Image (cartoon, rainbow, N blue to C red):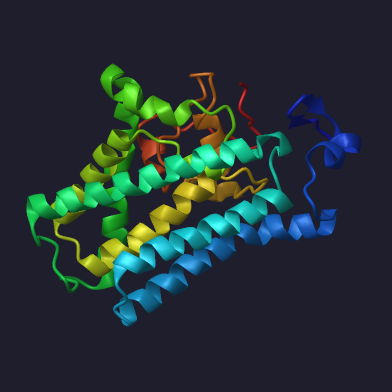
Length: 279
């Protein structure tokens, strides 16, 4: 490694790199984990999605159990291949973030309940079209709705009072991904769910997309040294989301937490290879 890398206390060069940023595994193991961590997560989404649809599993228990598994997996990776060891949450932070996580889950459940009450059973129980068509369509629709709501949350002063709660922590890790204002969660997830239901995507398609979105949401927030290379131009990543949390507004774009195509199309894509958040 010829260039200096970012560390919590400034810039360090190759000879000091592993001293400042290594996790609890050796170089070879860390290199392997960085290579397989994201493909393994995507494979889990596919496998759970396939079984959930074929076996007609109830989303009410599939989604939360899958999310807990994703969180456990990413917390482990944060210890093994951290981006910044100083971003690990302490015991007090874990307790605080745990409370926020429960509130976030409550807000998410309330959003889905309100949507269900408002539109009844608009979404068909069985796919109207082949799932190979419905799933990409639902992903693009939900991703665009999420992007617009997220961007508006940064631009509108009233909505920022809600969404700004998420940007209070100075660290970016899996634990504080759940630090949110309940009303922000109700609004954001409610509008996304409403968009999917009004278009008429089936419940199996929405379930599969929901698994992917949940995994992506926690993946991009993880304090892990994983880089996805050219896939950054299609999918969101921790590299991009760290820029989103930067206090330098010139680089703090990346409002998509699942797909990055909307950031490209709407002018908020700031990532480039090797770019680290300035502040």
